[in-house]
Structure formats: structure tokens, C-alpha cells
Length: 168
Image: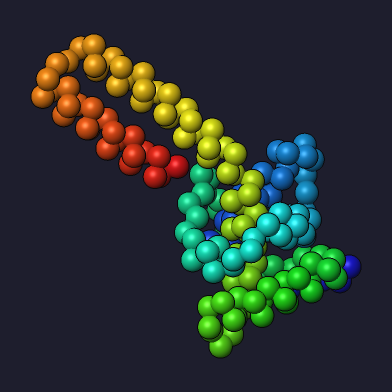
């Protein structure tokens, strides 16, 4: 494995740190940024339409202090992953109809895809939990209130429920 260098943006560095944390929790051991990139590349292979990933905004649960040096990525990765990043660069260039796509943008999209893959189960569990909680309170409101007041309260609970689920 040779050293691979790229400049990345702060949001990409934040995603890298979040993925590193996720992978360390799953494996129970400390892993390098290079291993994180290789695992993220592997986890991004589910994507068939990169335009959806490229345009998707990701909100992280945690914020990390990113030093200026962390924006100059210098890691060891396999030749296969390096080649895959180059291929994705060409794919993104076609999909976005841009003249050029930087390696940092490719890495950001790989990290987004990996993050989505690793957090989807947690997101659906949170939504199911929210659904149960709101059903409980809707039933309680039905027993406490009558007529027009009940309809207003149920409407308010439905809007609140929808807003909360859209932010998960």
C-alpha cells in the first residue's frame, strides 16, 4: 500500500471522524483513517445512483474539532480502493455534468453513502419509537378531549410527529 493524499473539506473531515467512530464501536478496536476510508468505500458499493448521494445533505449527530492538518489527508489505502475512487471521479463527472470533480468530493460522497448505510437501521428504529409514543399520546388525548378541541389537538400532534420524523 502506498500513501494516498487528498485535500478534503471540513464537512468531509467531520464525516470521516463520524465513520471512524462508528467503525470503532462496531469492531471494538481503534482503526486508522486509512482503514476507515477502505471500509467506507466497501460500504458505499450499494449505491446505484450517485446523483442522489451527491445531492443529499447529511446532518451528523456529533461535531468534531477538526484541525487544519486534518484537511490534508495522507493515508494508506489499497490499490483497489484507489482505483475505485478514480472510477467514481469519472462517474460523478458524468452525473453532475461538471468539468472536473476533486478527490475530496469523491471521498465526501463515499463517506455519505457509508454513513447512510450504517445509520439507516438506527433511523428506522427511532421513527418506530416515535410512532409508538405519538400513538400513546393520541389515544390519551382522545380519552381526555371531545369534539372540535380533540380534532385540533390530534392535528397538532400529527404535525409535530411529521416534523420530528422529517428531522431524524
